[in-house]
Image (cartoon, rainbow, N blue to C red; front, side, top):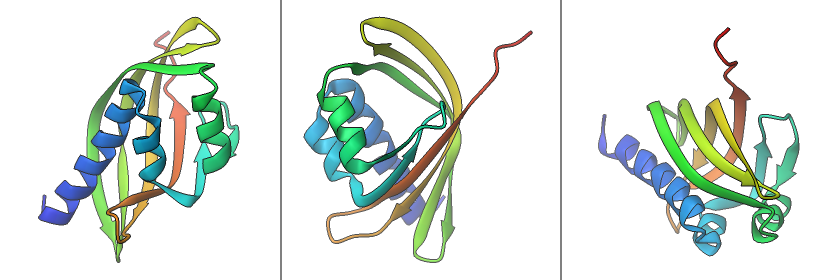
Length: 126
């Protein structure tokens, strides 16, 4: 893994840590103004919508564990691919979400910004 890939991976990890810590200003600063965020439910949100939902307190990320994460550079952009297990509280109800995720990161003057994110549920074992 080269220095750029390590930098993108570090930035992605910092975003997840900030989500768990409730540091929503930091989370927002790491996202492009043109963010497209696709949830495991297929709901699509802009940065404004996603941040409003987080700031409402209705959704709280308790724990996020990344698994099998890798970075692929595509020109001047970077893809982060992997899976994760999330412990989330939604309207006070605890949920565990296992998903695969793909995010696109773009360079900016303030560092790498997440431009898009899409996650897909990993089905529970039968």
